[in-house]
Length: 349
Image 1 (cartoon, rainbow, N blue to C red):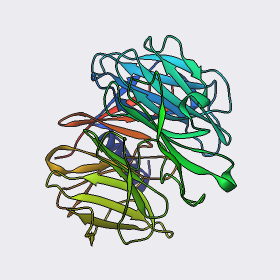
Image 2: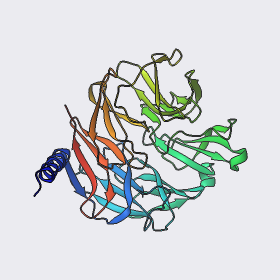
Image 3: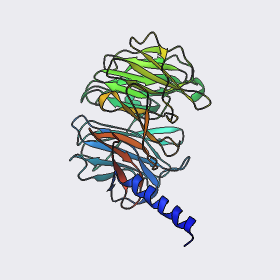
Image 4: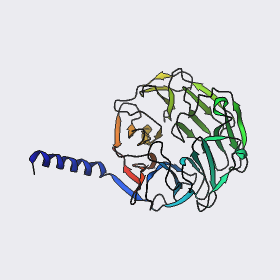
């Protein structure tokens, strides 16, 4: 073999071994090449749930939308069919426990809300009139009883935002913000939980025109926060020192980070070199956080240190979600190929 080609082969082999040496692939028993696990969530009891969507931009899922679930900390997994209808995208999943979860599927310009009470053995399509929303964007639960749905009512040109709230685990819903008088062009910055931060009864939701929707009482009342900066708020993080970090994504794709201790006086806080365009993040140990990867937007998984001084790449593999699995590991969604579906990564030191 030509020495130059031999050197290149060895270099590529070493790189491949290095890049995968800290990864453990989990087989979900599925094989749909245009599907991927795009979101992973913990239920309140520690059960892990996920939802699939298309791994190809602007393409629907093949053979419908699936949920994945583990009740034993990832040792084993089961899958269930939320809907077998094509031309659907899995949009959001909100698990309460091992048996109960809500899921949103996107169908062209409309949405559908599903509910299971038997661990995914069957999923029931719920009427949107029952939750007082025409088009659901995201669903979250603060506790087994208290949860919220953010969505809109009316045609796009005259759309009004509304937040519905449940106090009985989803049996009944009432509007906590009826017909929010906002410009029709403003919307949630990212699908599902990517532009949200939630802890206890507090929740921040990033909006597409630079504002943050905020509650401290499990969704009973809301107000808008203005940071004084423009750009879509695609990432919000509550750091351990009490700082709230909001990252505005500008029209040119660059990040503009601002931070505050009191939600009123925001100062610019630069992100380190090597930070990709952000589409959400999750808190990790010691005040660090990790960016949520998305193979469609070419956003990789990168750890940002708590002092915002260093960006540490986790993997360049095509990933779609991230969940803090253990103090030293993260769980990521991948394409649903036979023998794949989820990948467990060891965090860099």
